[in-house]
Length: 542
Ligand SMILES: Nc1ncnc2c1ncn2[C@@H]1O[C@H](COP(=O)(O)OP(=O)(O)OP(=O)(O)O)[C@@H](O)[C@H]1O
Ligand SMILES: [Mg+2]
Image (tube, rainbow, N blue to C red; front, side):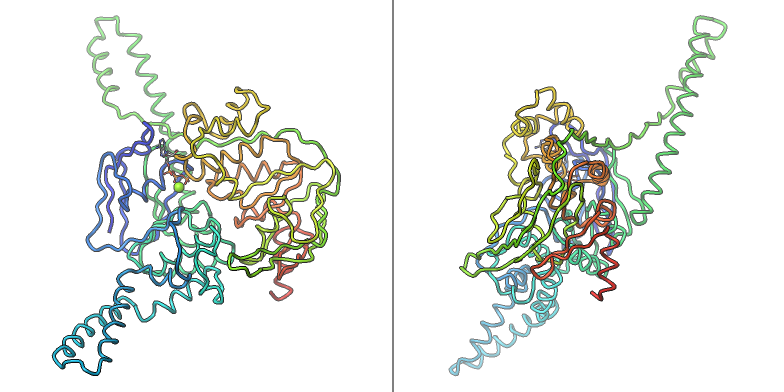
């Protein structure tokens, strides 16, 4: 369906890939993987024509219908959520409005019979096409998809502008799914979805008959959905026919073979060079020396594949702080909708956060996990009650908003320098280097950074300050797998207290020591790890 060949693309003077090729065949489910900033989003943008390759070609078979879910939702306004999704297929909406206009004209009692015949004919054609495009099912499909993506039926009629950014993202995702195209391009679709919705999306994508090219940094999601991996690494693009686990095994073998081959060749070259050095002055060996020089010139050199650089997190020494970190008393929060109605998120919450707890805040869609974290970290005011922060506790907060609040016109260096006023320039450069902003990278403007790079800027600022309590809302969003592992390791070592929301199953299992479940406006506390929570929940029959 799509053939990419000899693709080269430069960004800021550096090549992302050189002479890369891969194919997308009908119905294939492919994971496009690679560390942050390797150019995955750039590939999507080239396929849909938002950018063009510097060399090589992207050939798309005629009549291939492509839908693209990107990380930036366009403006939405003036329609209900349901209508927004139904209107996604422009041709279907056009046919729908034509059909109703034909019907109206047919109702005219004075209609001339010739005209009536024309109308009936054209109406018939429109009806056939409408039916072929699934026009009659559009409404019920849109309802199913919206509900699956966590938007309750009673909210389908709500105007799109009343939805927050994260929820608009779901509507945008629904707009893509309803098209049933030949190929869906999806750039990190699971960011900002909660677990239930992720599971629903997994199922939907598995059943989908068309082709999918998706990026995600979620291992389990990939294993469930994809059957082929296209990997960007060291400026090369390689294809592996299997799921993510298969790719990891193959990749490990590939790296081992490459390193063995590299050392074999190096020692062979060394021997040849020694021979040449020893005999080059002797006329008696001139012919042999010449032929050996020719031989080593001809050899294809094995390049050593470098492993992906890993970010390093050096946690600062933190003040110990008291045992009662946050005392939550009768806490309530309600939002006022733009239309004046009030929505209560939770009320009467009571709980205690102890020193060194690593608390996973869980709960279904819209239960209010993010709101809860915002209230206790003072990002937004409580409606009633309070969250008392213990003496000598300092709280650092990470959330989608912290990424959005980066100044796009700042350079990476200036942004971080502004957030760490006490650090020296050399100190800031050092910490940036450990977060993989090296050399010229620190002079990049925030606005050109990839999603993962922006998340790294925020983490650089957050984890360099000696906060003894961290409140983290989806800290792994955008981060590549290695960076997730590094963050997980740092948080496990961290001597302070952590409250977090995450939909990364691995992260939840490894880090959690207690669980706060936000449920029907209340908190249920589980005194155990994530598996304990899942078991208790199951045995309660949920
Ligand atoms: N105008 C620009 N000048 C310099 N570098 C740029 C520019 N635009 C993009 N880049 C760089 O190109 C690289 C590729 O970006 P891209 O968004 O394709 O990465 P990605 O693989 O999608 O990463 P992520 O996993 O974080 O989403 C990044 O390092 C980014 O900083
Ligand atoms: Mg990207």
